[in-house]
Image (cartoon, helix red, strand yellow):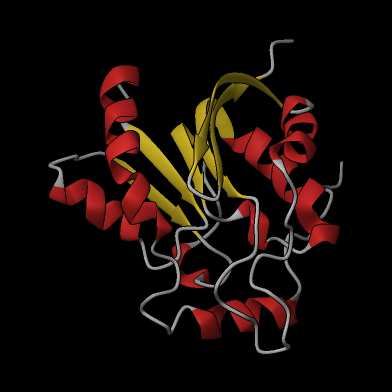
Length: 179
């Protein structure tokens, strides 16, 4: 029996652009603002492991440590191959990432998130333009769509346990779809 190759989630050119953007200390800081909400979820859901999908410079880990949270932290980011592959956890966080995905790979990324989300997922999605621009002139938010566009895609893969407006977008708490 042969294994199927993993579906692509990022192009090599875009991976390089993301690596360049991450050299800017102001890029990839959204997770810091969401850390208090994530800390509350960790306590409420009795989470012992967290997968940070699109971890960037691991700012979520740093912010949670400052709040005294100690858990099995599992970073993943294609711009940081040294983190290794994405891994499942009690809570999968994907903060300010999905709007940055190349549109042709979005379904693959959402499928991967669905496979990783064993218990709970916390995803924040920005729905408008970013301040930052890519080297090729495109806005850093490659997908700028309202929540009404995102929700059917999420509902295909997850049960929605909570949805809340956030500055510039929304956050959603999800769990795996029931069989």
